[in-house]
Image (cartoon, rainbow, N blue to C red; front, side):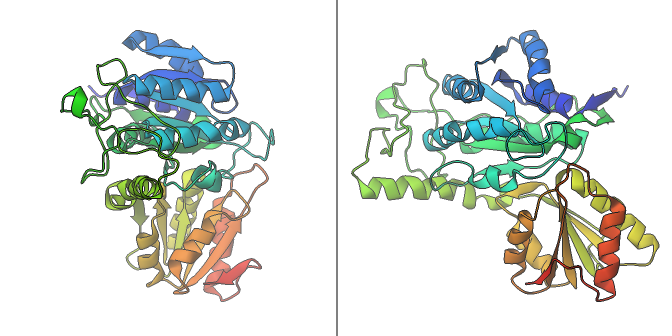
Length: 386
């Protein structure tokens, strides 16, 4: 018999993490992500996992990095200014190539902003919010079920590529409730571990996959997880340009060379679309509703939903731009991802921003109004070609 559960997005995130094998969570409560920490505190001991509430957000991600180095799949969750505080340790995890998942439930900012209201203002923060030159993987769910699925995927991608992965949710998806059927089993990916003797182990070796095996601390492999520029053995190489170039190049290559494995979009009714909507997260729900209303009115509108936001789905947007009259980008910020859409479209079609940043979800009616103006060649004021 199928088991249907009524879950919120935050609750589905916890179930997804546990299904994927997360057994350590360190966090610090902050609205609207707090339910993730609260439920982790209850559920992790039931599966022999560990929960720690740390003294602040900085310490929580530091603890997550430590747990991952010891071999556990580890996760943290936060929101707004809490994500800012994790920026330094996010860079540390990227540099030391430590798998972990950071959930950011977006709310209106900057700073304390509107703590209970939804926003999508951290899209660029998730890409560029830490220091240095690095790639990142960011996933954006649009439903409770997809929050479960993408949490599993975030854990798997972090293990597969030895890198932090950000699950970029928002206050609406995190707190809405939907009936979902959880799968009995999910695909589980474990980090590559060394098959050589400890004396031959190189924790940052340049190998064809670009993802060197990672030994658990305490397993007999003595290695230095070094935050400074380092060589293949983990030893400091801050005066070695060749080692620095090789390391940074490999950090980028292990993501860029596997874009097809990482980047995911969902298209609806794009075969005959004259206008495409590009949307993600909670706004994709309004965009889909607007598309369906438009279709009943005889308007040929399609939807491209960004599931992976970073790396950005450039090829998918470029392909759409070659066959539609315009791409409309509704998002709950002043216009962040629209610039990447314009860049990918490369002048092949109009790209129109529909921003909203007052803590209220963009409605299907708002989107529909813009669609009508585009189809009647009456572009909105913020239209910019190319």
